Image (tube, rainbow, N blue to C red; front, side, top):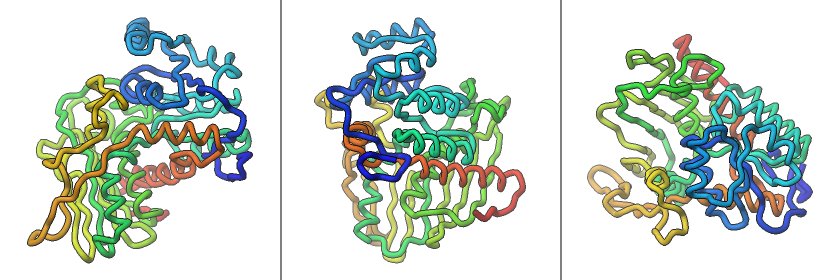
Length: 367
């Protein structure tokens, strides 16, 4: 696919881009405004050229932070200007990811898609095949790979400090007893809503990144809040081909939160609490490179490693969401691998689909 010799559908063609790469961002809701726009704008070599939104309120919000940005009322306007652009980022509702990514690739534009890339593994594979055929970068915004706790855990595992890993426990739990409304809580399958797709996309991606392919999947998906139509309290158990068992919780109805990570091995365990603070920082208006110690974690929030009788705090590596778009910029210029392969997204969706089947039938699903 790539002129650099890569055969991955997640690689950039590279080699023919000079100056700042011009980015069009489709969607300026929370994902676009809090995550993608500030991260794109703070990445050397990228410039936020165009934002697609028909909302005048959101345009005013965007102008305040990105005064030089241009606006488009529809994605079709972006496709018509494809030769003026170098990358499209899709931060639009989940139901639009497949048609918009397809249109962008057909227009000759590399694409970043917010997670989940699609509603089914088959759809994601079709997008990967199209990117391969067009020799274009296609990648997925799995920002939680650059959470502080995840980076710290990867380093601990790489050093072998836990011995042979038996079980990986991971949670994204919240206490939101009242519905917020919107498509994420819709029961319409076309909306690709519910926590298995939302938070589950992160949890599954992290588990597969750490411990490899899944062999068996069991899941429970419940709808607990009055008026809710999509799963808001779910659990998933994955048996990996290497033997590790991952237990994953995602919930909006957890009044007492469990640990973020509990990882148990033959030589000890790792325990951490609380969520990475890059999202709250972005929502508060802080930006990478603005003089703050981006992604830094205070000692009081470090995880611990060892046993109950002999545990020690482990300094947390800084969180690094900016690394995602830095890797995208490099892939576009040099033809290197994208930060997240679309085939990795396919594998995660296969697990999520198996989890949905397991939750419906009550049985363990073999992949």
